[in-house]
Length: 447
Image (cartoon, rainbow, N blue to C red; front, side, top):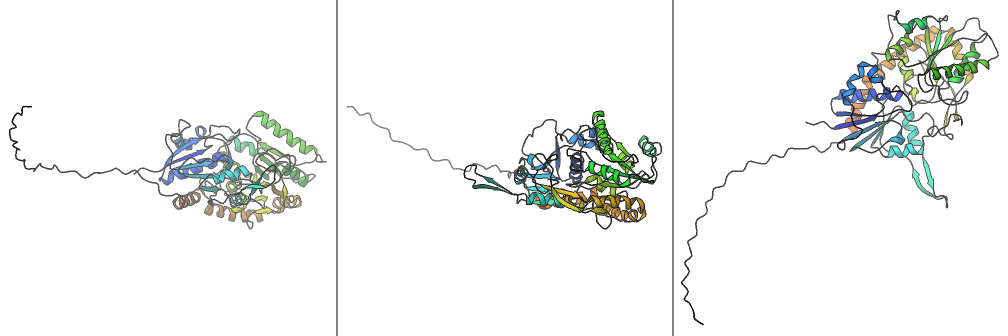
């Protein structure tokens, strides 16, 4: 029996969060063995290509990639893993998969995009709630009368981003001969906080991941202390070039210059592309004690989930996507208020009239010190979070949820059935011959 054709358009081969999400989704659908899966690869901003080639465990995806950016016929199922304004209705059944937005309002184009699809799969409750609550009115320019209301009332499901629990886990034996391990081992501090994420546009305290404020708070909290931890930043702006690295270093120096002290803690930069194995080695290094992230908003926050599997403490904000899986009893979730997106961070996706999280800086300093001085208390709780993450938010659990959703939501499609006609018997000719008609002879009539 022919399987329904399932075409997935996504940034499958990119070094990006959406690239990782795409690979997991495609792998899950393939492993269900219910669909004829095809991949239509896409770009993701300025992030580089080449992930599949550089990671042999994903080479099985190569055979699924369509050689031409066109479809021979309409697929039964069409899915796009991207931001909603790019959604298009192509298949007989159409699915939009997105991490959504990090603020309180999604752009109107995103709502319109969601309305094109039969089903939206959001990475978190925050994703779905914001899309549903984003409503707009289109008005006539002359009369100011409402001519159209833009809102989304379509079908949705939460499909979390399951972590690879075979990859991300506590390591019992460190990679002693590994260059990365030796590099981390060379720092003099025995205790380091780790941040993982992009440092994108925005003034100090206004960029989405709040990297600038994190560095400032770290300097101010531990300046002039005789015993200090370190802060390791695994970050970049748009890529892994030397120019990007140098720009990051200059930004750190500029923040350092604002602190009125010459006795400041050390900040170290990890820059470039790392494999999953290398990231897990970073997470497990004995000097990396906790993850810290003062994010203003997350559609999901994948590094936080993956780090939690190493059973180490997490210090982050109490708002948006990551609160689906981080339990406040086992992790430290900081309070704060919602504040409008600063003009320096706003763009066509992060609307200036939208709000996102503004962390309480007093709590930041308090908990940075408390985790440093009372580490065992936080470490014991982190083990419980690690167990929760492994039990409820793994790739296998995500695949189970996807199977359930697809089974319940996707309709039966008409199937091609071979028409079998009954074999006809040969009919014998039993007709009787009619007697020949004898006509009388006509006499010639003379006129």
